[in-house]
Picture (cartoon, rainbow, N blue to C red):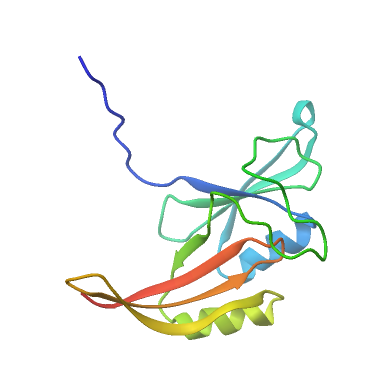
Length: 148
């Protein structure tokens, strides 16, 4: 008998921060809410936290720079161009792409792709999106559906 997983959502995306406090403050300023924090000395984790996306059961998990956790690729070094790997970006649904983009830039993010409208596939799905590099080099996409 074949068994399949029943996926019900995405629980969290984890980041390893060069500056735990700054990264936490960045995501809180974007609207995420502190949910839980901890340390695990056996994994060299001094600071870890879950920040909740309001109205969902989804989180961003942040680890300090010395945490020894499973990772995809390698972390960006301070001042280095963002490093690429299989995980491409974190996409956040927002009400106003332009406002989210400008707000992220005001918090220290850097521009990747300015706000623009896209028509994807056929029948077309129309979206507005923008991308920024977060404080640790992670790519954050802000997206909203325009029409379907």
